[in-house]
Length: 50
Image (cartoon, rainbow, N blue to C red):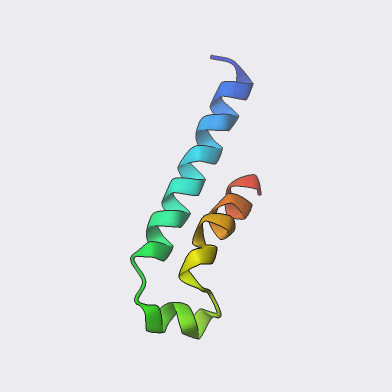
């Protein structure tokens, strides 16, 4: 496998894991963190790039 494929897969997994974890939080928990539910995809993309 190429490094690019492995890196893409890792990024996708990080996105998916972050997205799912944030989506499981209640609205109250998200509010406490200062996160709007509509911002979760963007936050997950940022986490996957790190």
